[in-house]
Length: 184
Image 1 (spheres, rainbow, N blue to C red):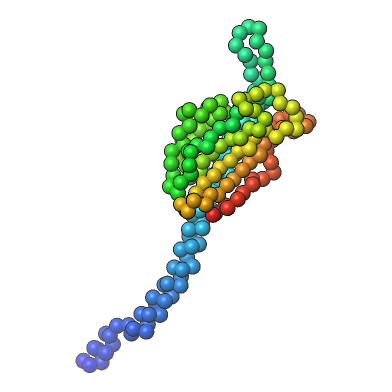
Image 2 (cartoon, helix red, strand yellow):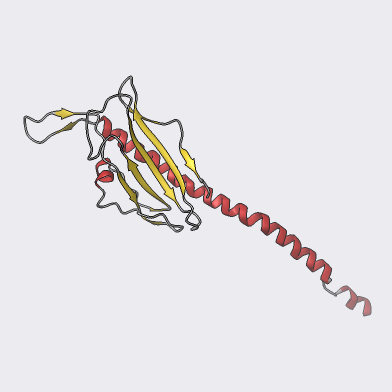
């Protein structure tokens, strides 16, 4: 009977301390890696939405615009004025993208139905109030997404520049995104 009691004892204190130490080391490695992966997933939103914004601006640029009335003229190569940021201030948590009053995003037909981590804006150095007849080779837009992924007031920034080419005067964007503080 005494043998049976001895075999039913538990773990020793040293064995338990080793298990706790191993769990602590694993969590010290895993938690920051997990947070970094979550923040990297959040950045996918900005890249996708900036591409959609560029496509909307490209469509607007290539469409012909006519004035009101029978004797009006038709113009092309139009851009909209600067607009945004929407939402006004990026936050750690998602917020609604409500741009009901922004004439720039309305003209482009750009809206986001989902909640967003980033604030979006379009900067048009060539047009104070929107204009048409832009010449080939001009820089026309800079699309921006700015976010505060971890709530520390350090912002990550994604920018996509767009201009017109010299051959066909069509809108194109830069080779890649300018990124600053991607994961903060």
